[in-house]
Image 1 (cartoon, helix red, strand yellow):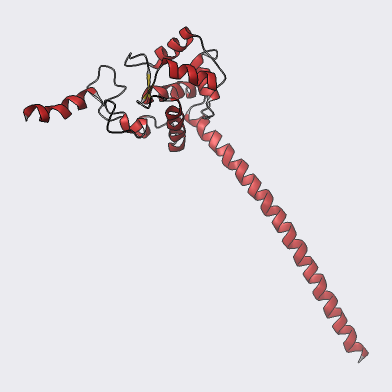
Image 2 (cartoon, helix red, strand yellow):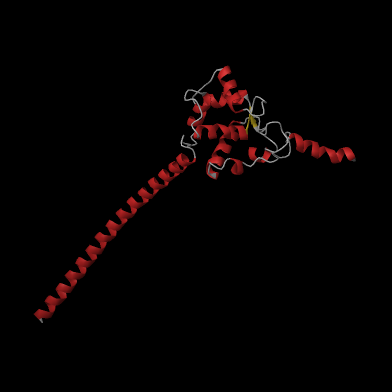
Length: 204
């Protein structure tokens, strides 16, 4: 009985093993990514990576899950190799190892979701070498995080919103013009009708 009671506690201390939560990497990330273990129990992407919007975090999670072929909550060397090939920036074996090494805080030679997010944090802060594999990954992933960090990401979404607003404003202007033309045609019609009525009054 005592052994059964201790088991979940042992599991909790070591972080999750392949099993109960096949959902998102964020869901599986109990105790992950904290050097030396212990301290942090649950990794909350939105809580720790506040420089990114929820939408960006969802996009990063989608990308992570797409290349986590083993569905174990990690991207290992072979999965990273496939990812870089699909993104159009294939790397050498050594290049791939260096990519992992740069953000591998727990030194397990693979990327947890938290470590994956660190790539985008470094990209946003302008901390990645331009010719590095991680820089290529961040740039080619279609998750737009500018090197100005939060401000840059904010500007990107503002620019997108502005483009949408401009498009809808353009449509509104066309509609307004059409309405104005309709109104003018209606007024002209009414003036003609009024003039005809006036003419008929005079001829009576």
